[in-house]
Length: 211
Image (tube, rainbow, N blue to C red):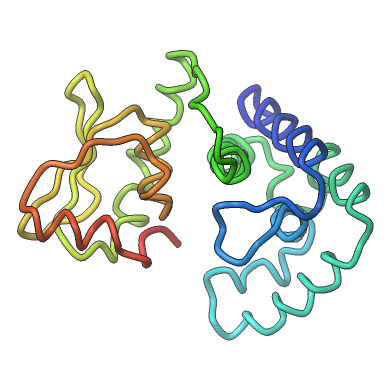
């Protein structure tokens, strides 16, 4: 496993364990148990995980999710800690590097920021750069359904176009916060939005951002 993916995996597992199975998350309708089951299914049941983005597979995903949600919570956490089995695409180093660093960072924040007393993590610049690199590669995919033009901007001025259109809204923040915004966690992301007032409102309320 990559250094960042492994670190975020273990942070997520520890946090899920500490919060228990019934804590809230930023994922609408999901408790920590549901989130843990999602992480395990995504890595261990590729035959069902496709239902996350492929509608004809959604019913199968729902059945498999129910099966894993019924497992002991401690077992789910242990499966997260041990990582994907060898047959999983996520066992490939490059896939792990590209996909799980972001996946586990976002889901860790889904748990942390559901608390009323949460505070931002202090992330080192190397990790922020790694998140920005991934954001640059996926921005247009994740922002494809934005209701306005959308530009992501780092505090140092670097930008990435997530969606072409007018009017344009520029979202400024650290890469970690921009990721959360683009992955549909607009209300929890610490960012600044600049542009047409009505467009900003539409973007902030958009429920279709992310996959």
